[in-house]
Length: 560
Image (cartoon, rainbow, N blue to C red; front, top):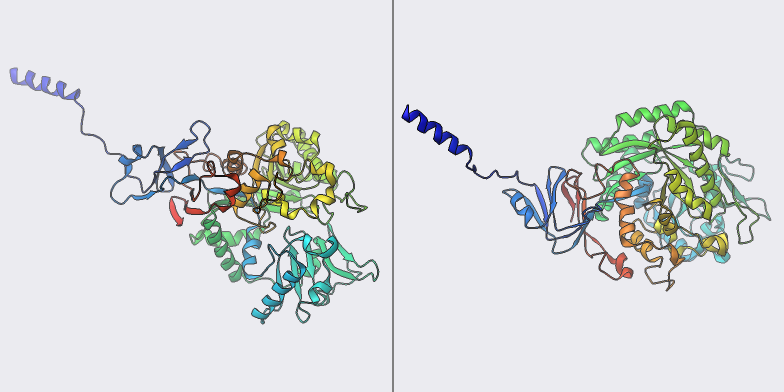
């Protein structure tokens, strides 16, 4: 009995003693000694990140994550550099941009002769190409602010057809051979929204095609092979990784493009998260929206998803195709026109919303922006208030009363800082005039009114796809050469933190993915970028010099 009691006492005593320490499961990857900007308002800064699999498991001090380092853990010493969430490019045309790597690139060209020389050089180095295609030209390269002509291109290449689009993608420039092969004449009819520009003296096509008129020539260009498209996308993903882009939202899409991404996804070749918005227009029917809603269920992410539809409501300022409330200010007799009447736009938006689809509306002119606002307000009345996250894309001009409507309606202001680069406004600013210029790319006004800003590149309809150039422009409103000294419409500048939020957590919110990505938070997907400079501590005019040192995607280092 005495031995039994002694045994019981021994057992009871042992229950109160601490056991051996439990070793936390090791991390696969640890980033330490960093300045970590988390994008989390409750804890914006940290020193280290621990990753297990494709998830963040801890965000803490460098000392605190030491217990997660074990045999096989990859450790990256950041050396005090800035770490941010992976960049989310919330509006891009990724396939078209990627195809541009194998075409004539006129990005950054400053004169007509320079553009002609590039076309000549490309033609010489690609003698077997039946068509010479490419783009990126700026409207300001043509003398007297005129539009391009076929004679300009004939001077470079006459024996092969040439088709080159403007940097914004809304205007085409072709030579005489391209018009001939396409069968385009003064009598050719434009289907949809656009204009075949005719010479005022001869009545013949000038070589400029606005908006959907480009299809008159594009329809004659041989379609790229599937293999060439896949090769282009692989190159595009490589470039995206080097720029810290770990997610993008494709602002135009169709079933064929979706299948390309699906094939790369099946091969494990996606190195950025892809969300597609399918293009719709006046002819889209309710059954089409139901079909896209079914694709949402088949492609829910987090690598590849279909979630939205995109409506083109107007064009661009430079070619006077953006829909304005008042006529253009540079002597033009037009105020532009929307691609759809308000009633049809209201119907499309309400039907897409009923199908459970998110909606993106391209609206650049202040009239188009107002129409988009009206259509969303109509949809809310028809379908009730719910978490729709309606988006308006671009918003280059807007009236003061309409700025306040964004927050009231809960809309997302999806904008592209590089479109406001002062080096590209030589044609833009005279077209809208001084009064409307005061509200040009009104980022700060929208932010102050309570709207959520979402930033992106609109690649390849941009002079640069680099997010650091976009952040530079958002913060400085000056070119990389410092023009103008006080900034262009400087009241619309935003802070570094606002710009980063617009490229990270707000981009994730814009695609209903803020619970999965967009901030450096335990439990979220491990998409992280390490930068060469601390954007919060350097001189703002040096932001554009910042390079990506390391890109981590889905828990793995994909660029260094």
